[in-house]
Length: 131
Picture 1 (cartoon, rainbow, N blue to C red):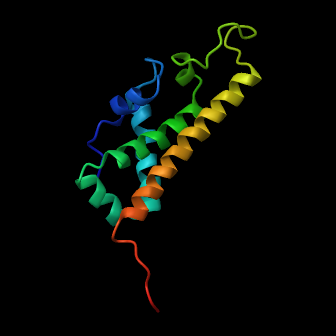
Picture 2: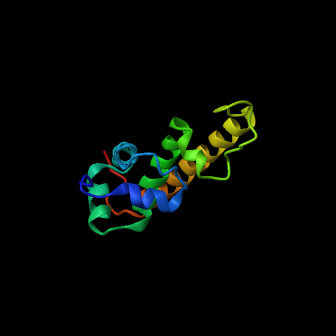
Picture 3: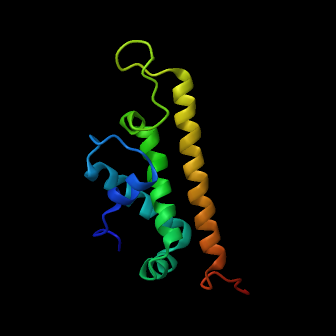
């Protein structure tokens, strides 16, 4: 459904990423985020929103991908304000930096889930069913 979409450029707009991170890696995380969004919204609702090119859905997918990218790669942080060149030794990262990375990751994830909740609440396909 979104396989042909080039997520990496959009994700790089939202979060500073090291230029050495390949687009293919970013796109893999984006596809995982698409699957997460489909699981939360349902494939029908996701498809409807994707067909309408809903920017909130696009943001939610990007935010989920960024959240996972932050946790999986130090390279993400080389281009952001988190990286501290005064760390101990070559390639070392301070505990405070790890805490900041995790905090930022949680922030992106919370924003994604907030956007998905808003979309789910606004979608007419979700309704009460009387049994």
